[in-house]
Amino acid sequence: MLLNLPELRVFLTVFLLALAHAGDVVYASNAGGPDHSFGTNGLVSTEFGGAFDGVNAILAQPDGKILAMGTGGPSNRCALARYLPNGMLDESFSTDGKIIFDQSLSCSGLAVGPSGTVYAGMGYATLIDSDRGYQVVRLDDQGNFDASFGVGGRARAFMGTQPRVTGLAVQSDGKIVAAGWSYFNGEWNWGLARFHENGAIDASFAGGTVITDVNNGSMDRLEGLLIQPDDKTVVGGTTEDAMGRDVHALARYNTDGELDTTFGAGGKVILPYMATFAGEYISGLLLLPDGKILACGTGSHVDSILERFHADGSLDDSFGDHGRVVVEMGIQNNGFAGIVLDRAGRIVAGGTATSGNISRPALARFSFDGVLDPTFGDQGKVFLSWGGSYEYGGRVALASDGHVLMGGASGTANVDTDFVVVKRLSEKANPNDVDDDGVPNAEDNCATVPNPQQNDFDGDGQGDACDPDIDGDSVDNKTDVCNATPPGALTQPNGTLRADLDGDCDVDLADFDIMQVEFTGTH
Image (cartoon, rainbow, N blue to C red; front, top):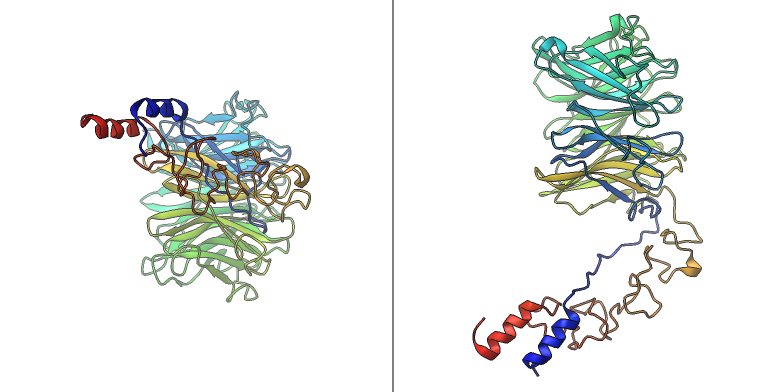
C-alpha cells in the first residue's frame, strides 16, 4: 500500500541520506595480497595537480622511507614524492613530501647513494640546442637542493637535442652514471654521462659522455641500467634490425667508458627478432647474485618477457626456453616495466596488462629459474585495479620489510591521473592476523577477510565483510537488492525500501516527485 503524502514526507526526512556500500575486498591466502599497514588497503594515491601524474621510478631508502618519481603538476613536470613506511607523505621532505622540478623530459632517473643521499635524473631543454642534455639533482634529507653538488645542487652534461634520462646509478666510489637516449646529429642513440661525487663531469669516462649508435643508424632507445661490483656499466634497451623491426639490445662499458669487448660482440648484444607481432623492448635490468644479468620487457606476441644472460652476454639456456620466459599477462599489449629479487631470491616483475580497452597494473613472481610461483597471487600473477578508467603499473622495488612496492598511475586519461604506489605482501599473512588487516584474530569481527575499519552496519558483532546480512533486514546479501538499508527501514521481501519508487535503494526527492505525480498528476 502506498504511503500518503504526509507519511512520505516523514519517511524522506528520516531516510534522506543514502548509506554507501564499499566494494568487497577479496581475501587471498597467497602472498601478493595488499599490505593493509600501508596507506588504504595497501595503496597510496598522490595528487600533483596535473593531467598526467604518474610514477615511473620507485626506490626504498635505507631508513625505510619510499621515493617515487615521475610526471606531475599542471605543466607535466618531473615530480618526486617521499613517503613514510606506512604510506603517509613525509612532511619533513620539502614541507609536504612533494617536489616539482622545472624540467619535463624523461622523469624516471632515481637513485640513492650509500649514505642515503637522493639523486634524481631527468632531461633538460631550453630553446637553445647547445643548452640541452642530462641533469642530475642531489637532494639533502629535507628535500633541499644540495649546494655542494654541481651548480646549486644540479649537475649537467650536454647530450643531444631531445635528451631522456631513463636510468641513474651510483658506483661504489660515489660517482654517478646517468643513462638514456637522445637525438644526436640526425639519429636517436644511446647516451651515458658520468659525474664525480661533487657533480663535476668525469673526464676519465671517455671525456665524460658516451654516445652509442647501437646498430648503424637505427633508432635506439635505452631503458635499463645497472652497475656491476667492478663498476662496469651495463645498459639495455631497443634497437632496430636491418628490416626496421625493434629488437632487444644490451651493451657493457669498462670504467673508462669504452665498450667492453669481452661482452657479446665488441661490447654489444643484439638479439634476433623473435616477435610475431609489433616489436620487442627491454624495459629493465637486474644484476643477479651469480653475476648473470636479467632483463625484462616486451616480446613475442606483445607479451611480458624475462631474459637471462651469462656474464659474457650470451643467453642462459638453463633459464626458461633457451634463455627466455614469456608470460601472457593480458590478451593484448602487455609487458614488464621493472624487476627485483625478493629476500628469498625469487623474481618479482611489474608492469601493465591490457585486454580490450582495459589496462590493469600487474605483478608476477617467478622462481630464480623463471617458473611462475603458484604461492603468489593466482598461480603467480596479481592483477590490480585502482579505480580509474586509465591505469598502468610500472617499476618495482622492495620495501625495507621485504614486501613489494610498485608505482604507477590511476585516473582518467588526458583529464586527471595521480601518482599511485602499492605495497603487496611477499609472504602469507601473519598467523595471528590471518587477513593481515592489522587487527589480531581474537579481536577481529571478521578474521578471514581484511576489514581494518571493523565496520559492522547492523551491529550484530559480525563485520560487514563476513556478514551475510549486513543491513539486518533478514534478506541475504546474495539476493538483497539493497544491501545497506538504514536501520529500521521498512523493506520489501527482496530488500528494497518501501517508498523507493524509482528502485535506486534510496528514498529521496525523486521518489517524492513520483508520488506527487501519482496524487496530483503534476510535477
